[in-house]
Image 1 (cartoon, one colour):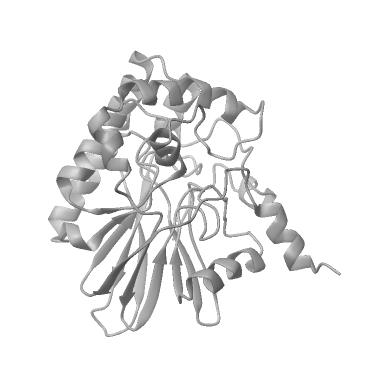
Image 2 (cartoon, rainbow, N blue to C red):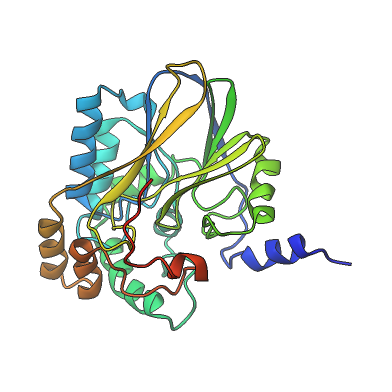
Amino acid sequence: MVGVGENLLAAAMVTLPTMAKKNLPLGPKEGPMLIFGGIYSNLPALQALQAIAEEKGIAPENIINTGDTVGYCAQPEESIQLVRKWGIHNILGNVEIQLRDEVDDCGCNFDDGSRCDMFSRQWFPYAQEQVSTDSLAWLHTLTDHLTFHYAGRKVAVVHGSARETAEFVFESTDWAVKEASFEKTKSDVIIGGHCGLPFHDARGTHLWLNPGVIGMPANDGTPRVWYVLLDDSEGDFAFSHHSFAYDASTARAQMLEKKLPPTYAETLVTGIWDNCEILPEAETSLQGVEIKL
């Protein structure tokens, strides 16, 4: 007899082909760390975050990008080149996998015929045209997951989950779904991306942590975008969520100039998503409510 948890796990599986996941162990890390993801080709946001990291004195080797460097906005090639030049750690998002493998869709796990799916048929071909052969070659060097040890805890960095790159995991997602990734990685902390919203969820000794994304606001009615800091200065594993403002008006203008989806361009300045198709009911009910973490 199949249990409830198993049914939930099956429901969360996505349609991307199953591939062997590569993990890159970074070994022990110490000092402040900055974790972020979802650049989504938003170069102004990425430049603003780089300035924040430099102001805080966080070295590139202590900065991790959870993937989807490429996405909805206007500067995919420039965003890839900046993270390469910056020298930070990067893992593959589903968009990078699809670009690398020359697949015709973004692999975001959107329902066929949905608004998200319709808009992806505009921005993904644009990204394919813009990303250089050199950048595509670099994508082939990236790993699916990273692991490291920090303040006595094993940390795994994934994009969606440890099982599927494009699996949506939210704060409200049943713990049984999250537990599968802890079992697979044998980790104490999982840092994930993909879902676009910052949150943390702890059960016992396990912590699921999502930094949110910097390329799009968090559907809370503000143009702010999000990242996470890790801190071991007191000898324990500590984390804090942070938001920042950047030149969203320029990013919006660039999208409109390139004839990318205008409602996504408006989201950059309004902080409201065009739709809540990917969101569970709990997260949908919070649209327009300012996040306080």
